[in-house]
Amino acid sequence: MKKKWAWMIGAIFMGLLVGALASTGIVQAAPDGAPLLAPVGTAFTYQGYIEDLGSPANGSYNLRFSLWDAPTAGAQAGSTQTKSGVSVVDGVFSVTLDFGAVFDGTALWLAIEVQGPGDPGYTMLSPRQALTPVPYASYANTAPWSGLAGAPWAYFSGSGTSGQIYHSGDVALGSLTDPGGNGLNVQNYTGGRAAVRGADQLGSTIYAEGQLGVLSPSGLPVNVTNVGVLGLKPAAGSNGAAVYGWNNDNNSANYAGIFVANGTGTSNYGIYAAASGASARNVAGYFGGRVGINTTAPTADIHMVQSDGNSSGAGGIRLAVSGGSNWKILHTGLHLSFAENGTRLAYIQTGTGTYVVPSDRALKEGVAPLGSVLDGVMQLNPVTYSYITDPKSTRVNGFIAQEVEAVFPGLVKTDEDGMKGLAYSDFGILAVAAIQEQQAMIESLQRENAMLKADIEAIKSLLGITTPAAP
View 1 (cartoon, rainbow, N blue to C red):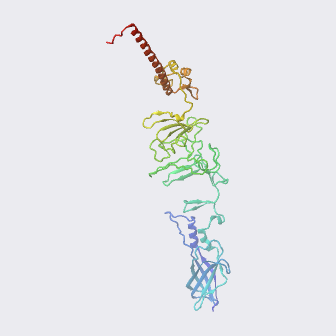
View 2 (view 1 turned 180 degrees about the vertical axis):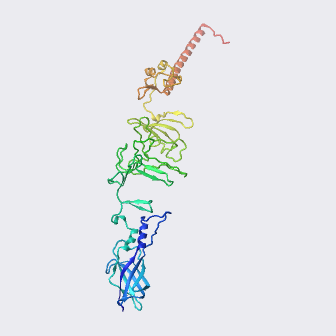
View 3 (view 1 turned 135 degrees about the vertical axis):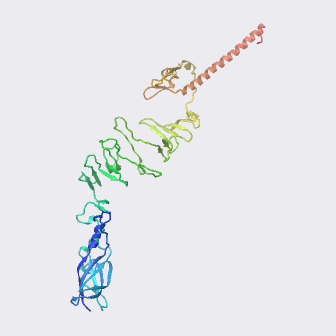
């Protein structure tokens, strides 16, 4: 059997290297935006030299190539490449090999087997050839920046100057020099410029100034420890906004902002709004259109669908002050009701608008007769007057609270400011009681008059006096 040996003279990988550079975004773009060079895959050209019995080989040879992770033995990497009928001239041959994406930085050795004219089988050449760094250029297609020496903190994914920026650690931009453990830190360093500027799909410029994703914000009116988006507007400038939402789409439903609180904690706030510090006006919220509560289709300026219709429930509008009673205005199914501390005290009847105060016997205790009121009623002094605050000086009929208090103190109420007032509906009860009392007096006088008339008729009969008939 003939003895053959071969060694690598050189390997041509320039196409592979250029392709790798193009795929990482480093390659320059052509004027029309297309890359000047495109990736060429994982194939490479191998050139070798064969001697047959000490002389340069000539003729047609069959060659077989395989990659291994060790100079001897070891594990094979990729598939075996068989090249039949390779032309060898003066010992020199050239083949194209493609083992696939096996170059990941691991050292590899190339094993070569040769079958010359008339040979019954292949002869393994020894030793295996250690691959030089050039084939590993294909690794640049997928190599992580973290594994490369002298890698930049960020790089472009794309071509030219557009694309996406990646970084595995904290970033400080602008006038900041230390991220301080925060992910992205940006501070504007030019007066009148924003810390962050973006552009939408139409090319409109959007400026942002504030904080995003704050773990421990300070100086806020509400004590929070984690904020997904935090907008802080500095005092400089006018007509500013910490957070601005604007939607000009033509969809059936457009949202300038969506806020949903769906946590499992004690309290969830979809929107928490507060306003303070203004010299003239503090407005926690302004709405230029209809407002819907529990409804996405309000039909009035304020449209609320109650969560329930119970006086002691959560539905309705609650009005409360610290240390005072809790008042509610709510729809209780049929009527518009007014409740204090969960108890309905009055309602406006549906259909008629009549103001009704509950008076069921089941609601009362300590029921007793009112007693004589006629003398007191006779002491009341009805007057006519106008209110000082009424610019039209409209005349009103009524009573003076202090005068009523002297006769019926229970009818006089005193407000938080010490001003006295009257519940005029109570006077109807006094009027009924006084009429009943007066009617009792009339009936008593009528009985007394009838008795006197009977006595007179008896006397006249004894005297023989006849009462003439009425004409």
